[in-house]
Amino acid sequence: MKDKTIIPKVNPLPPKPKKEGTDIPIFHSVEGHKESKKILAGMLVSFSKDGFGEYWPLYLGSNQIGSSTSQGNHILLAERSVSAVHAHIGIRRLNDGSIVYELMDKGSSTGTLLNGKDHSVYNNYMKLVNTDQINIGRYHLVFIALDNKELGLQMNKDFKGGSAITEDYTAQ
Image (tube, rainbow, N blue to C red; front, side, top):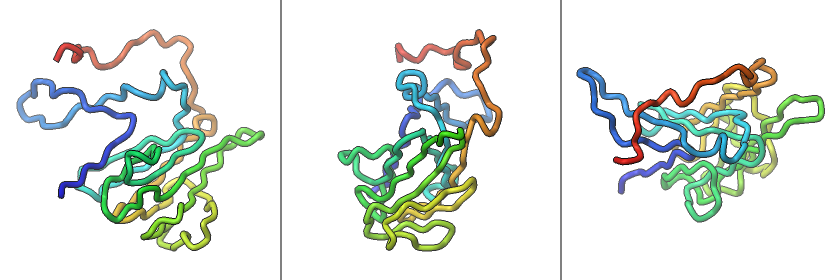
């Protein structure tokens, strides 16, 4: 059976005619950010499945991870070693403006490892920090914290650009 991991919030566009010597697929985020007003607060990155790399955005609030499409998961890892509802990453901004990142196993059958240690028996939140390593089933994930305030990232009020993608794929 072929593994069908779904990358939320990122949809591949139909293939653009390739230039000679290029074989890079084009991806464009078309959901989430502007429409839902969610604030990007982190990423999960993995090279486990095929060596090319996969990534999943994490937003302020609840980020549920699992293998089932019918359980309200935000991050779908369609692999047998991942439980239907496997883990949860909660991200919240405190009154002082700092962001807290927390991981909790949701009673999965294979457990959740944080930096090589099994924390699933506690069924309790574990604090996450930038570049922590998380094992969920056969997935080895790296957590990347993106605190826009801490990093000094903000909206440019003078920005007048449109999308960097100029081709119209809607008719294809």
